[in-house]
Image (tube, rainbow, N blue to C red; front, side, top):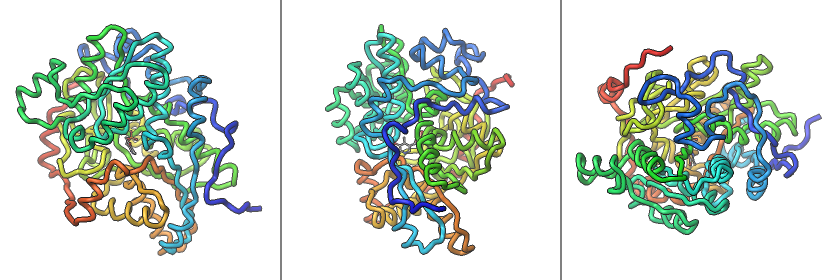
Length: 458
Ligand SMILES: *Cc1c(COP(=O)(O)O)cnc(C)c1O
């Protein structure tokens, strides 16, 4: 008997997952180990815990523990904005005249406006427990810095954010949210670190890049007693924390006996996608079920669809561990025309390995069509989506239209990672018809890819 599915499927507070799920535990072939940038050998716990706090270094290196308990302090924080709703997009279905059923997991209902708070609060908690004074990080578009500053103010840790200079100037409101939560926000490249001074000297007037801001943040952490560096995506520990998205989604679907045919997520560094699909990928890996898992990335920064699967640096300054991932090369800088986030050159090594094993498929989309999808969604579903999230919306709409043509009643689930209130400059460009598509040429990609480090490990 089918229950009538409500517009919003809410889980009760006590139904919120008590453990995070580590999909690596169910992978027969594991993601390749991360390497020490100095020795190019697999990094040890001791080395890693110089950069990250100990519990996070442990989580990063643990590929066998299937479930990690979510500490009560973190659960209590989660309860302020979780469980997040799984929404049945009835209105969008009607508008598209599709027999498909569309669901989206909405992670934008907290002040940071995205899923990033799920990991920020966990990372800051472990830092606090270890007795740290503070943490440093980088932020590009600003969501991660905002999430981290919220988490730090909650647990009383100092928060230092290196914000890519062009965002610092273009997104003054994000900057002010971070400062309101007590964070120190520095435009990157800055004159406060060696890496930053070198960049400013070599490229006067540069507006910065994510890779450079990462290097500055790591240097700042290493040069201050009681500080560690934290990162909002890409890492295995971040995917672990973000698995709460997928676990809740699965619990909500199970509650109504809904079996998804496909699960779609946008992919920058791979954390929301990895977290959303983890429990479903686990079922595929254990031979229990089959789903189509789809990663959607911008055509201007196409790491899965046009990158190579190789070891690469995670940052421009080459101070972070190396990861084997689909990458465009750490020197790749997406066009300044590219409006949304998702501009990271690489991809989570777990997502990369799942893609290499054929569990995930990937597609890339151009930004004007992404904003068109965002507009359709905003006008009918009432939420102004983040440009990043709109990549997933675009793919979901495409799939729903295919169902209209084939008459198939498929269940489509996608991750709506956040809201777009701070992205109105991009929306303005779109509304004024001034937005442009940009796709790097093969030659441009070849140049940044040929700079990859030579690593002999397998
Ligand atoms: C950061 C961000 C993303 C992309 O990051 P992933 O690590 O790939 O998930 C997507 N959507 C929003 C709203 C974000 O803030």
